Length: 252
Ligand SMILES: NC(=O)c1ccc[n+]([C@@H]2O[C@H](COP(=O)([O-])OP(=O)(O)OC[C@H]3O[C@@H](n4cnc5c(N)ncnc54)[C@H](OP(=O)(O)O)[C@@H]3O)[C@@H](O)[C@H]2O)c1
Image (cartoon, rainbow, N blue to C red):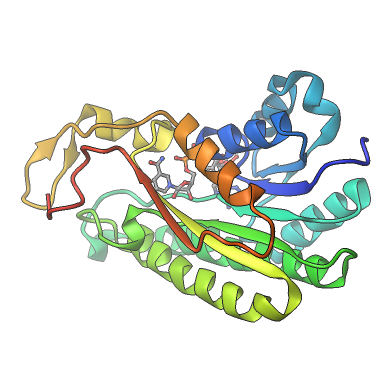
């Protein structure tokens, strides 16, 4: 393993935004721990990085489970010695049905992945960041346009993404004294598996079904790289990157 370059942990690194960001970080010279529940997609991200694969480890992880998250950070520390950046990206939604029809298990799965997962990963990262030399690091939470405004029938997703904003602010405040910066990226309609249904037509607030524009996921990767590349004395607290013409601004 190379001993140069900053160390990043990316959750949900096997697909979509997490994969695009992980590959961009590897390209930039970071050493990266790739996390996700399934081994195959994170191994694929590693091999897709080409020569940079020697600076990556793939660690199958369920971010909603404390022991699994402990192992992810223990493996990262063992391989790379420190953690400079955590991209809290793993996430999921629940089926778009009236909220009274959701099972407790469906609610809990979204809370575990989106909120508990981000908290548990932040805990482990903060423990390492506080004790390492040089001290400190950065945490970037993946929020959403849904951290600001809900889509119809998205209570678990919207509630957890609003909660991420509180987590971001708390980490920023509590991290100040220890050189730990925290920012949030709120994305709207990046073209990933999660947003396939927007290309086909998705339920709008007025009850109509409309196709929504999406943007290339590469724009998210370059935005996260900018946030990550700042010196710790500067921080992007919140950034919104969205498909320009998607319904959000102007209430539709
Ligand atoms: N695409 C957009 O326009 C958009 C907009 C706003 C916010 N976001 C946010 O961006 C993040 C990534 O979304 P995406 O669009 O890239 O969708 P995606 O391709 O479905 O990616 C989600 C990733 O999270 C991982 N994951 C889910 N639950 C997990 C768990 N419990 N433990 C570990 N990993 C888990 C999945 O891998 P495994 O299944 O292998 O675990 C998958 O790689 C999410 O937080 C999403 O809310 C996306």
